[in-house]
Image 1 (cartoon, rainbow, N blue to C red):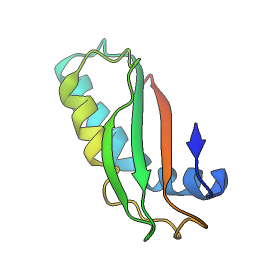
Image 2: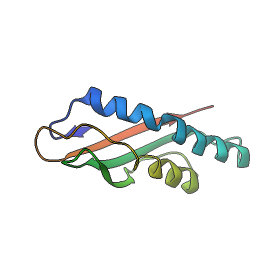
Image 3: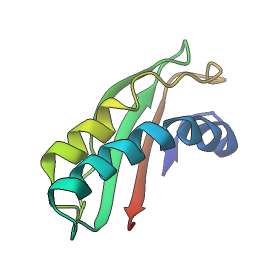
Image 4: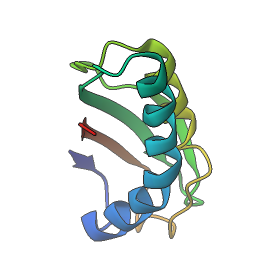
Amino acid sequence: MLHGKLSADVVSDGLKAANEPMLACYQRELVRDAKQRGKVSMRFVIGRDGAVSNVSHGGGSTLRSSQAIGCMLQALYPLKSPPPEAGIVTVVVSAGLDP
């Protein structure tokens, strides 16, 4: 879900940059519990300067590991996008995780 004026493609491209660190979070959890599967819902804001802020759990996640979820949320902070056309953009996305 995307609110505000920023192309969904721009957001998608930015999220691709976070794929590797988020996958690393999940893989670390798999070492601890090889049966971890599920989805993680994430919510964040892209500010007027294109920086990510207000990263939080988007609700509805089925992954049981709060450590892995927290790690994945932290991986979103370094993302940067072009500034939105107007105002800020709130993004809510879900990622399915299955090795």
